[in-house]
Amino acid sequence: MPYKNLEQRKEYNKEYHIKNKEHISVKKKTWFLNNKDRVRENKLKTKYNLTLDQYNKMLSDQNNCCKVCNIKFNINTKQLTPHVDHCHTTDKIRGLLCMKCNTSLGYLKEDTKIMQKLIEYIKEHNE
Image (spheres, rainbow, N blue to C red):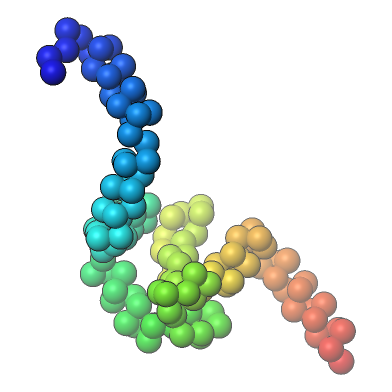
């Protein structure tokens, strides 16, 4: 269908997406399920500037375990999927962590003083 201008094409696309929302959604989900490696590779490259080979080497070097708590990763379990840990200031990648360890670092704002106070607090109340 020829379009007189870009605005007509945009309008047609918008209407098409509204009319075919469900079909498009199923098609997208199917594509993502069939292309998990491509999706993962693209995310690693765009978010962390990390290749899939580099990621897999990190996974292998860590024996497929979290670098902090040493729990075995399992990609079929959300909480045990490896997360790329990086410094939010320098963007330097530090390793792969489980969801709990990575989230904990985020909640603590990577502040070693707070972490040390938590350690002291736990020791004080465990003795």
